[in-house]
Amino acid sequence: MKNRPYPLYEISPIRDLKDMLEQKQRGMPDATAFWCPTGHGEAAEKTYGDFYEEVNALGTWEYLQDLHGVHVGILGENSYEWLLAFCSVANGGSVAVPVDRELPEGEIKALLEKADVSAVFVSPSCRKLAEGLTDMTVFPLENMEEYLAEGRKAIAEGNRSYLDFRPDTEKLCCILFTSGTSGSGKGVMLSQGNLAADINASSQLVVLHGNLVALLPFHHAFGLVVGVFMVFHYGRPLYLNQSLRTIPASLSAARPWALFLVPLFIETFHRQIWAAARKEGRDRLLKRWMRISDRLLRWGIDLRKLLFASVRKAFGGELEFIISGGAGLDASYIREFRSWGIEILNGYGTTECSPCAAVNRNRHHKDGTVGLPVAGTGIRIAKDGEVLIRGGHVMLGYYKEEEATAAVLRDGWYATGDLGYLDEEGFLTLTGRKKNLIILSNAENISPEELERDFLADPAVREALVYARDGVITAEIYPEETVVGEIPKEDYFQELMKRVNRGRPSYKQVKRIKLRYEEFEKNTSGKILRRKEET
Image 1 (cartoon, rainbow, N blue to C red):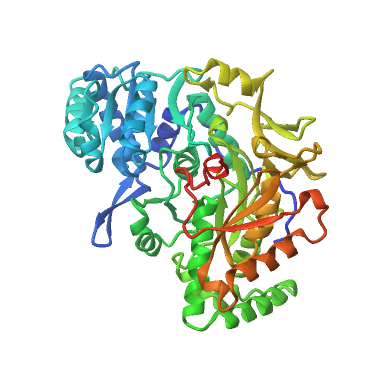
Image 2 (spheres, rainbow, N blue to C red):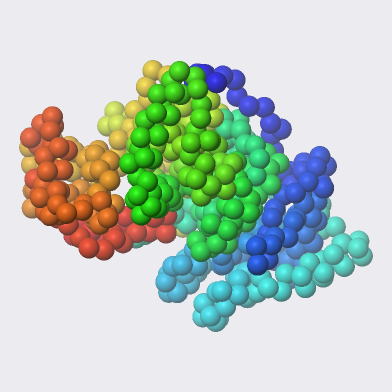
């Protein structure tokens, strides 16, 4: 299939999340919506009808507990019960507030208090954390069957308070906290209308087939809205992976057709594939077959599924697409995965955009870009290069942070803080973060991400961060030990610095290399905490 423009995909639009559930209940109640791991390689099946009925039962139980018009936290790992809690709260007129359970205990409590949470659903793994939430009502998720039984009983007795409630699409329905790269997150306020607009728009740009696996955390907008709700809207079965440890088993069991991942996952998979090839002495052979396969593909002969079956087996054997978002991804990964028969569709979004703003399409994509604006989204570039976004998916604002809201919402446009440009075909390319610009004494501006991408293209570089210290542009590198080999590290990276600098004006050249022997500290999205390392 040629890589060229084609019409948007057609799919029934939704008004809100409650409408989405009702559409599936009417159209395909007996089809599989979720597979929920139960241990020993087995998974329980939940249909769209099951999910619809259980959300309503839980929502009715919540009304019995006076959980209506209040802020309700959700604290726990990915699970079916987590999704029941979110949808029942958001569809019943309350505000769902998911929080990352991996955060320090004090920060979790501070975020819940900041969001005015009065009750919180808690998974068994977070029971100890819940003991410190003395001013909030705690509902253990392991008691879900009890909640559902009480809700079903109330419905059977004629209680329709929850069933008949219609969400106001303009009102706040959830607060999702940004992870940030400077250690401070903001509470992004999203409405049912925001979520519906993003699901509708994203579904028109990218089509989904086959099975999928939810690997990203649900407390992030990408993992929840795109990785779960967009899949649900498309009517595709979703396997709910619960932890990093169970990823291989989940991929093997579900044999996904597509995955939603952040670059950290892609880079990790890539590193594991090449590490395994080197360990087995097959790395040179793998590179050779990739060159041969790429040449054959240009002649219209596609043998990738045959030649790279062992690589593809790591993803279950059926993987066709990876939709990547959350951070920048070097085009070298896209090219290598394509050689193996897996197309990476790079996208772009922020929590403030619910989250999708642009994505490469299944059959219309361009390497090095983050794709085309999703349907109904306006993207323009400010004079200083900042990317501005407008559309129905743009947030209501930051919770309790009026100044921060006013700083980014201007005349209907959301100022992303990202720098980039649109090409003649409408594809968006990002060049860096506005706040990360290195401003030299001669008034020249340098985007550190541009230099970092060139360092990261070398297989010996696992992580890289470029910054100015005492007026000297420095590249701090965490090496990939298995690649450097016999060459002294200092010599290897000094030569790499010369290659990266080649062809660049003097003011853009890296002058110093600093090696480190542990990973950079990151936020919960896997992004390096940049300011912490630069001080």
